[in-house]
Image (cartoon, rainbow, N blue to C red; front, side):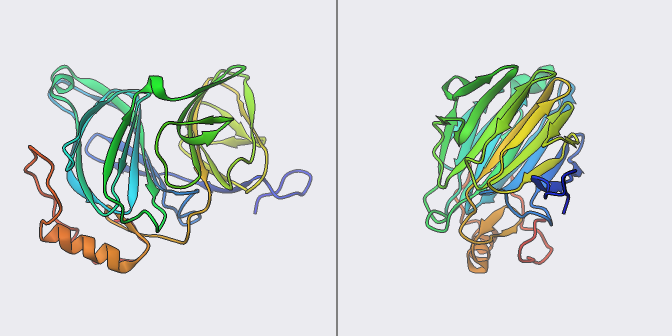
Length: 305
């Protein structure tokens, strides 16, 4: 346990390091789930992808795959992607927008570079998180919602600009529909600026996208996630121009199993989803024909393949 110079416990309870994955010229920094923290509030999965530059003719092709028991939240910093799902949704997402897809009992989706972007070459940089659903909602019917950047609340402090992606923070509420108390905020800071993060939510994390940051007086390394101690006020300072996200919320109602693309409160729900996918009984994504088989490696409770 880290301590301050005064001997008191540090407001930073854990520091999560990224696991870097190369998805074929497409680098992903994965922070959650981690050994030191399976979740921060309801956030059970956190990927920071890019920035990646694609030459003409190349792009991202995340083939159709299933989810249960979670909501995927996609937020772009650069570039654009096309979302398609088994509900028939077709939605382009651009920087500052939010795609919120609730899987519930089951949904299938793909994410690809649009033909016009693929033809000219493009850059892509963004975040994708999974929000685990409370037990009362993990078997809800699936849904999809898109929120344009102009619809999201902004918070302005001296030298600091924030966009509230989801939940409640700093006296504002995002229009995104959520299932438990949470917050998710994108922050841009000018060099020398600072603000206090007050304990509005039980569990909180600070992720450094870029720039030199201090969290409670401690340097936060780029692409690391600081998990904060509950009910503390924490000072965040920028030594240079910086970008970060704040996230968290109330502790979820119990631990979750996570395997492949499935999140659930029980082994039975994951086994049922696996059988449905193997038997191809999930609804298809219109105009998509590719099929990703289940991983061959046996399911291990509480792990992500």
